Amino acid sequence: METVTIAIPSGRLLEGTMQTLEAAGYFAPGAWRTTRRLILPSTDGTSRCLIAKPVDLLTYVEHGAADLGVAGKDTLLEQAQDVYELVDLGFGFCRGIVAFPAAAAEGWERKSPLRIATKYPRVTERYFWSQGRPVEIIAMHGSVELAPQVGLADGIMDLVMTGRTLEENHLVEVAELFRSTARLVVNRVSLRSRAAAVQAVVQRIRSAVARRTAVPSV
Amino acid sequence: MRLERWQQIPTGTRDLLPDETARVRQVATGVLERLRRWGYREVTTPTLEYLDVLVLGEGSAAGDQLFKLVDRGGEILALRPEMTTSVARLVATRLRTAPLPLRLAYAGQVFRWREAGSGRLREFPQVGCELIGAGTLEADAEIVALAVEALEAAGVGQFSISLGHVGFLRGLLAGLRLPEPELEDAQALLYQKDFVGLRALLERHRAAASHVNALLALPTLRGPAALAEARRLVDAPEIQAVMADLAGLERMLRAYGVWDAVTVDLSIIRDFDYYTGIVFEGHTAALGVPLLGGGRYDRLLERFGVSWPATGFAVRVERVLSADDGDAGGWAPDAVVAFDNGSRDAALACARALRTRGRTVAVEVQGRAWEDVAAEALARGARRALLVRGQTVVVRERGGGERTVALEEMVRGEREEET
Image (cartoon, rainbow over the protein chains, first blue to last red):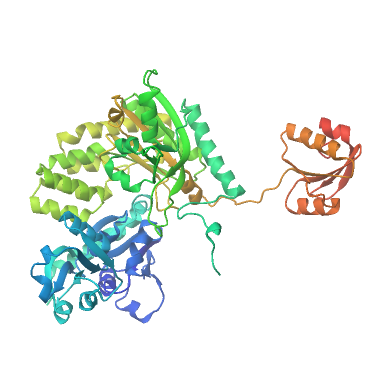
């Protein structure tokens, strides 16, 4: 069978992705920690993994440089690339929310014009448009929570996991836009031209995820 | 170093050098010639259309992807993003009284706005065809068989046509008996190929289990067993006609001798609003994007005032080329002709005679010395270099060897080849 290429995101979702692939039998536990290589052949030789920046991941899959990939729903929503989203991998849970400084949170709906700093300009714009509310988006690449404190924006749209960052920066959540987990995505041509090999990977990962969710963790 | 504007071309556009242009032309004419043999005659429509025409054909959402410009009279024009709408407009106006069916082909550049850095072209060539006025399965079979032949003619080595039907998805969705807004959501999720979101939505609404299973199994419903497997999963009246159509198509495509290159693929998802029947894509393992796309669109011409069914496809020429390693291969003329002082007229007559016989000939126009001209031409791959000197021609062959021939004989083509 042909070798299948799986794109894996560095960063937040790396750990969960590798655990899933280990559970699916592609790697020996923890083997990936000791290497600095960006392309890892699986132990059973059926596939190889490439480690990519999360923001680039869907590009690899959409163009077919990788047959499959793991991406957060947040990235899928923001980038809207043409890929098949097949499995909810269940880890990497977070929420996309709008937050304002505690002092300004009351009555934010009436504020106009509204300036929002975010790493997700398109999702944010779509949300405010759907509310019929004009918005000025300030696109950023990190430390979004800083923006309202220095007067760069009125509020932020960002991911939260525990809410601690919000708290520490005196921000209050006012709206939830989406809930995100890691997803398994597939290139539209790979699904057809390498159907057997790609479906085998999807199946193995699907069962690994099912086994994990079936056994309650202690 | 500063890159000046005059050194750049707009994002998503391409310059093609002679070798590249030759390959594009070869693919396009190869496909057009095959279409012609099936009775499809080429039409040409303007690159610019009124925005209103394009929006009528593509739907208003397509407006975001158009390059627009304003005519002096204030009319908004746009560059065509594909050819089918233009052909539909042409058919509904100038060919309104033509006998049906119409078999039309086209080749041309199309334009779509794409984000910079997306790695997608904003201008690219398409070659395709439309079969208008026949709503039969026979017409569908002809178009699918022709799609196989078109990719063959384009020189694609290994490819397959994935054949699906929007009626299958529509039937499954309708059978879910969801309230209207949820149905639209389900359709949107399917269109985005978001099967995780679709599963969540269907679980929330406790839709009929068989329909849900069939929808979620979509990405696997392909290959020889796809129809049987789909029937096993869901036995709904909504999709029986579709299944019968696909089975009928299989019989006809076998008769066309192209079935080996076709795979039934119920997971093919193309624009629901546009397509009304079969849909198909051409794929090759070497490329992550389809080489060809098409299907039946029986509602499009209605928007232009004639209610004729239609079916067709378009080939993405530049994708065909990037799927093929192809030899970039050097190119050189068959012959280079130089001349001595005073022999120019004789040299031009000699070149003309050779061209008449189908040779590619380049005449020396820089007045360089014969030795230099011959050495360079032969090194670049020309078959022979000719020096016209009065009434004689010195012929130097690429393989080595030199002979002298009378100009007269060379012009008549008697001693062009070495004897």
